[in-house]
Length: 137
Image (tube, rainbow, N blue to C red; front, top):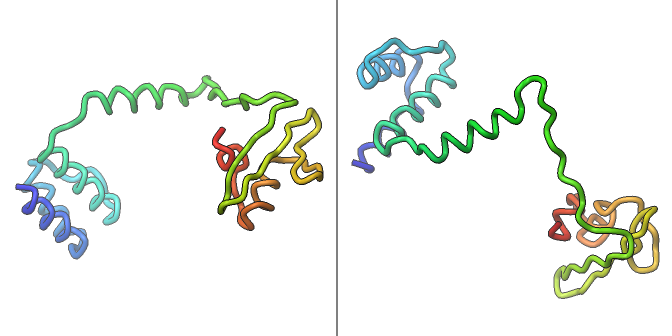
């Protein structure tokens, strides 16, 4: 059954809008809800996968909770840093141990003060990083 589904999903990429509409009507028994070829292709692929494997009730509940957090009138909660001035952040990068001291006015790495943790992560790695993510916060 999964092999047949894989083949069907692969065949959707080559279909034009009329072919997609025909598959939608045949498999789902109703007219397609959208006119966009790309959106119809994605919606059809999702519908066929749900048809084959069922829908996850737990996932639906998690998605509903997440969506309710972003409805009009509700402000999203921002995560705040869990480290305080005086803390030392430690990260090993390419075999080198890096220590960053957290201060009220910034971060100190290798004796130099920096305004952001992302700047320190960029200096360590040579590429843009989200500082808290780089240090595992």
